Amino acid sequence: MQDQVPSRPRPFLGERAAPFSAFLTDSFGRRHSYLRISLTERCNLRCQYCMPEEGVPLTPKADLLTTEEILTLARLFVKEGVDKIRLTGGEPLIRPDVVDIVAQLRRLEGLRTIGITTNGINLARLLPQLQKAGLSAINISLDTLVPAKFEFIVRRKGFHKVMEGIHKAIELGYSPVKVNCVVMRGLNEDELLDFVALTEGLPLDVRFIEYMPFDGNRWNFKKMVSYKEMLDTLRRQWPELEKLPEEESSTAKAFKIPGFRGQVSFITSMSEHFCGTCNRLRITADGNLKVCLFGNSEVSLRDHLRGGASEEELLRVIGAAVGRKKRQHAELFLMRQDSPPALPSTFWNSLRVQVLRHRVSFSSQIVTLWKGGGVPQAPLVAQQWLGSSLPQRHFSSHLDSDANPKCLSPTEPQAPAASSGPLPDSEQLTHVDTEGRMAMVDVGRKPDTERVAVASAVVLLGPVAFKLIQENQLKKGDALAVAQLAGIQAAKLTSQLIPLCHHVALSHVQVQLELDRARHAAVIQASCRARGPTGVEMEALTAAATAALALYDMCKAVSRDIVLAEIKLVSKTGGQRGDFHRT
Image (cartoon, rainbow, N blue to C red; front, side, top):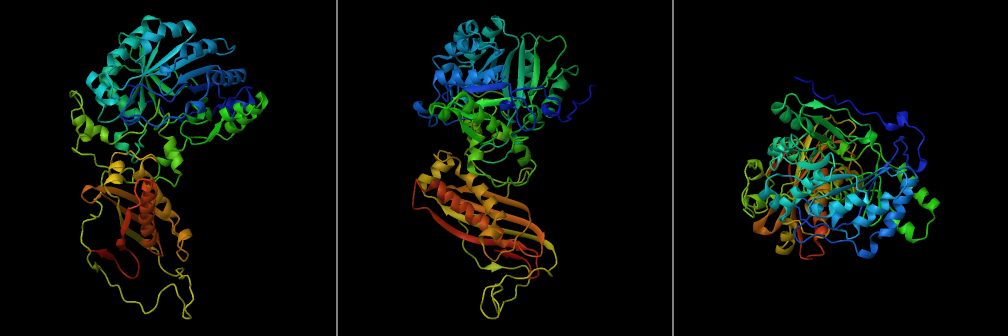
């Protein structure tokens, strides 16, 4: 049996960089010779993990790049050393002048490759013209080989059109034709062998893409199928599977079964990143330059173009943006944490835009819809995705636990607090000195003990806001995810918000939200853990209260009748005054 593929980190390009345009070389020496240009935000599909059935708000046409602006920027980048351009979207093949754009790009001296990433619906019809215009590479997005499942995922018919497009590409001599498949546990991981079997007689490069585990609700690693797990599945069927040499700047790990015409690749953006050799830049449909797909930092080239910037001024703007590119993308850090760090909501929004191939913001309701019979049932849909008949959205910052603790029910009657240990009455407030002035408690001589506290809050939303949150239809985005992150951030900043609180080095923060249909409410539970001389009750209470405030902020445009209620300590353990549990 072959050895497992080594996972040694790739060297950074800068370690052996040749002379290259300074404007397109970052501080780590990576030379950016590959440009992806989004031609449109529009799409002719409505994928469950991408957008609601009615679509999403689009950028006004006046704010999008014109054809001339696209070509002007492409010309500038090619002049500086870009030799590969890929056209993306949205769906690029719905842009009326896409053939003309390809033809104009082909005239640029030094541009060696013009590729396109498409859902394939219009490919068979347009490909002869595109090939004549100069299109040299094709990536087709296809997540299933089951027609009924395809119709369910994309909310449109068209599976046979996509397959027709694949065969048309082969007929016209494209080799390999790349087929991109985002693998999601419980939805299509059972089709791995079927996809690979296509490569036996067809010159395809089937590229399995690791699903990004942030699904719009929470970090959900249960849905992610890792590269090594996929590879093990393939090797059980084809032990002779052999690894192909890797190109320096390739994002894919390529394999081939001896005797097969095509090959298989893995895009390991989550388990084994390729940041060290990243040579990609991206221009969005509205003219923003993104130096990292997963980052939220953008600079508007459109505004500089329309402001009359010279070529030299544009290059300085581009060079400054490239120079600020990070060593690696952010979620590699996030994946190693029990609690995602406090980041602005724009970061999480950026994860939903142009991730993997178009936009990825996976809806938890995909499972319910599939079970509900919106289209004819397809075989082999994993049962773990079909656990309930109604959407249930649980949010936990803990990434690797199978447990999903039940939140405190908002319908529970109020009861006196009970303590499992002594809780003596105090004759004096601890934060006031003998003269009545405020004073911070000295905890320097207190022993370090394990401290845990749980607090809760209830947000009474009303029927309108509740429905919008449940269906994730708020214009501001996913309110529950934002509230969860706000709570985590607040817990870590408690000592800066509450004047006499000590700074506590929290070892764990967990914020959960659960929707209660009966009361049209969201129930929040926050828990904090630390080892130290002082408790973490205030951290837990601050997390619960701030999560409630963030939820109010996300919904206030819909209703001003929202009520924040029942902010309270549920339990605490550790410390000299004993444990406390509310009953």
